[in-house]
Length: 311
Image (cartoon, rainbow, N blue to C red; front, side, top):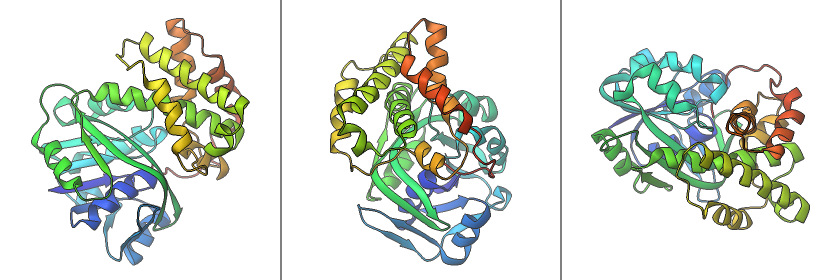
């Protein structure tokens, strides 16, 4: 099968790179210095799960040179999604499926309106990875890719993607309840991103301090309550499971939003804590922690107006 990765930063570069290392036919759609580095020196992933060195990869900034593929992993940041959707038409053939890997809960709707329900799937992932320098991805924790049809049985392209992921060094799940998976990720990520960013601290610092950990749990509880009020059948055990998982993660783990904040980049704040606070107001669910996060980080939301970056 042919796979295109649109947005080849931390998320797209990590999963796409590990797939390419197995021999999968992967094309990276990228731009700027990261694209030039991949064209000249390939792609490297530095990871506690084992480094990946790809001296040569297929990379371009023009999807018209790629043509239709079987699966598109769509991994740009949410604030770049509207413009990046314009890259998709040349990649879509009769049976192409696009898997969005954005944070938040808005991506599926935007994608479906742009490419049509026949080509849109749902997707989410758990990974801590960033561009360390052009051509190099730094992976620090987690590695789980989840995708599935928005309704009905999974198309062949998604079944083939699951097979292609076998042996790639990360967990791949073909889910029949992808909307629940997306909201489960949003519940934990909105809390994790917001609290690590507002405290400028990695996860280990937060879970080791009772007051900071209480702030993190409060944010998680608010996100969960908003999801339930939205009608999403979230498992009531999520809060306990997520809190337990935090203690087992590497203490230096940072959210991508904290990484962006530290580097002066745009923040996905409106799509994370901002969305929890907005939905809370609409649904009558108190969200004081997320409202605080969205308010105090507001001055940094536009970063330094750098060019669009991959997720």
